[in-house]
Length: 64
Image 1 (tube, rainbow, N blue to C red):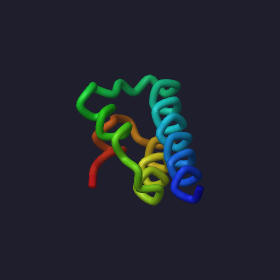
Image 2: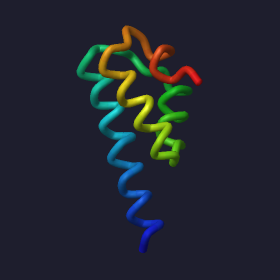
Image 3: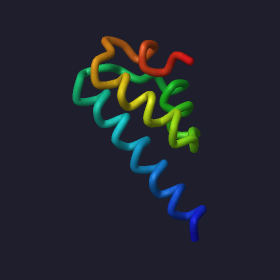
């Protein structure tokens, strides 16, 4: 049950991240979209989400 809950949170964070990027007009190439969609690390998704609020390009968001 805990694993399902964590996956649900990760899915919501992935969707929110991509929605913010789209709303800000930041294009996400397929390769980087797959990177986002394949990520299950909640901390990493949080980092990317917070970066997406101020970044001017997708590379700034998804840099390691």
